[in-house]
Length: 308
Ligand code: PYC
Image 1 (cartoon, helix red, strand yellow):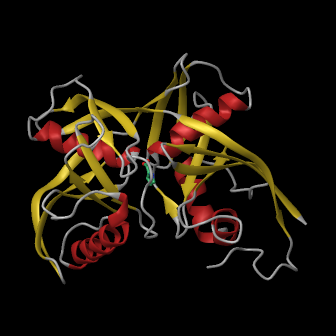
Image 2 (image 1 turned 120 degrees about the vertical axis):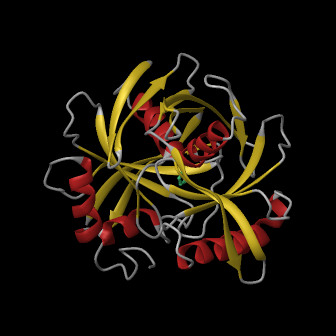
């Protein structure tokens, strides 16, 4: 019987399961090196942790691993129901709250090594967390794709730690009761973008007017077809890159992004290279720890490694 210790949390409704112990030995090196080993040799472990029957499509996993950069408190590999994730904003907020829950960190700044670079998270005295994310930018403005069943859809392609296609003119109300329609439209858009000669995107974001006092509401579809219950930290970073490039938000000003549930992240940015449109985004939100558990992996269990 193999035992894996995990701590679950949610950030604005989006769950994160942090693997505290019992993970595979990835052989050291940078987190990017370790991620390749995890992806190529331990996919069963990923599935065992996040997929049914122990998990669900919406769960994001995070495996703590040794950082190559010794100024970092930890390294982390994020993953979901279908594979690894480059970066995860809500997961980083969940990670910081989890490390504080374990008594491993206190308020202040903490550096974390991810496969796409070091991010700095600040645990504030009130328990909220700000994540200074990796540099973000808009790659393509107003790309038009022909989407079967929807017609011509135009959107921006941007990097915020993952690749996003951001759409305003989708014609759908961003309301929880429309989740099936929103999922279907986002999935069609993703497939169209990824087959019509654009750089490949993993997430699709549909934007609309705010409903809970923010600046904008979004529906974010993740690569495994689950929608993000939070406003999506990397997605908000990509959005900030777009509004910064369009001159719609001043450097240092707050941008409040609402999720489809109405939960909020506050984003801000500083220019890194105005000519190239490259920004340093900071995302602030809160997370709550909601379970401490030991996962039991028994090879005699027909679904020991998850339903895949
Ligand atoms: O918060 O960056 C994020 C995220 C990515 C996928 C799910 N959440």
